[in-house]
Amino acid sequence: MATVKHVAKRVLMMLAGYFVAVLVGLTAVATIYGALSSLPDAPAYFDFMGVSPIAALVVPPLGMFIYFLTIVLTGLQTLIFALIAELFSLRNLLLHMVFGAAAAAAGFTLIWPSAPEDVSPERWADIAIIAAAGLVAGLAYWLIAGREAGFRHPLSLR
Image 1 (spheres, one colour):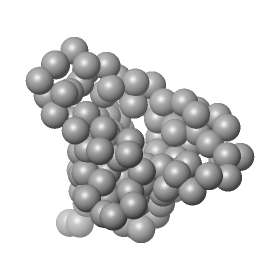
Image 2 (cartoon, rainbow, N blue to C red):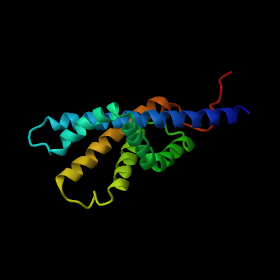
Image 3 (cartoon, one colour):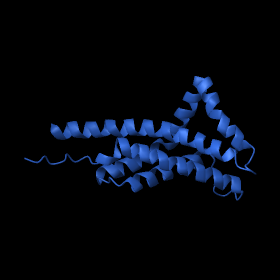
Image 4 (spheres, rainbow, N blue to C red):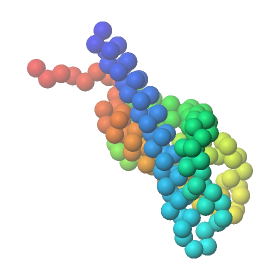
């Protein structure tokens, strides 16, 4: 019975960690684009990407659409990474951050399939920004669920 409770707790922690990590990742995307839009010779659409989070706050349905779209685009690969971490009790911070970056970049390529083949520097900058936000999201996930990863119930000391 204790094992079932432990696994149920881990699944709930995985879900909570994922939903918070998505919010943190979206905030990181907006922050990175906002910071980069102030640089000289930044692409014009960086300004739009820096202002769009304000629009998402002003129009909550738009914000919820972006949040759920992100969940749909990153859900499967994140589930795979989380299950790997739980099955093998992988608790390494760097590993969770790399998993987050890979999941975010894969989600970006799902919405923009030709991005890796597009040789323009703007596409590669977008992939790097999304991957950097995935690193931050992986950190948030690790703080909530990754530090104690493992479906096996830890042995109690007597």
